[in-house]
Length: 330
Image 1 (cartoon, rainbow, N blue to C red):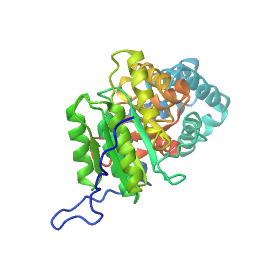
Image 2 (cartoon, one colour):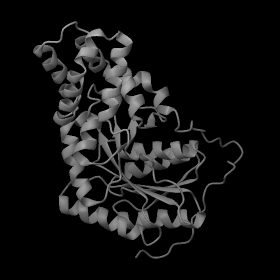
Image 3 (cartoon, one colour):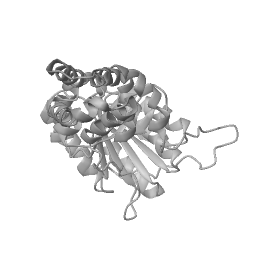
């Protein structure tokens, strides 16, 4: 167990004169605000499906086209089969449906495969006198450190107090980057020396959060996939050491939506290393493969809880199946 260090002073609740913290918007309603961006990147999917389904008499070739459109959007085979089967049984309705009815039907079917009943609440609240402790995992390059910064902003926007832990000690830039994100909204970042023990930095961050009685501690972990066993040992150790201070309430896996199936394969390594409770899909605005949400959930059995829809500081939104389906259909 790391040596006890002197308690860390948190930034003042009231900024020093001349120092102005940014006030991020709350997380509620973000997906609706960002919907146009999502709709632009997914428009070929919605347009393609509506064009085919609006035809007067649907032939076998038309159904194949619907199937291909869904598969091209990375929806995955089983979900595609389910959607096509259900639409086929309703093909009598499709033949007489108005454009608005057709759209509503498609939104309903897509919402159905996006797992509308999955629990997407984030474990960020204080519990039993301890802060919520969120570990963020994923390969380097998926946007993990940026996501931690954006999560901190969203929490501050929701009125929560936060401490960040820069436990990706193998990249000095990661700690610097995280500190910058934190400073903008008045959040402290606990960091260690470059190449130091990630578990001790995570421990220190959580200890600081416990002592300062903050709502949430968010820890950025290393994302090296050098060897599977090395990664497992490292993440396992971080979690064990942290839990000497407070229980881990959420483990978020960050995936780059543009990597498609490759991302799902990488994800499995992390789910074997540590119990992942939610997925954050980044860069969804830059891909027409919105169906990756369906695929990730089905193949990993873990709900997508947050989605990244751009480069902006507040472009991370809670995932809402129906609003997402609406945006995809356009």
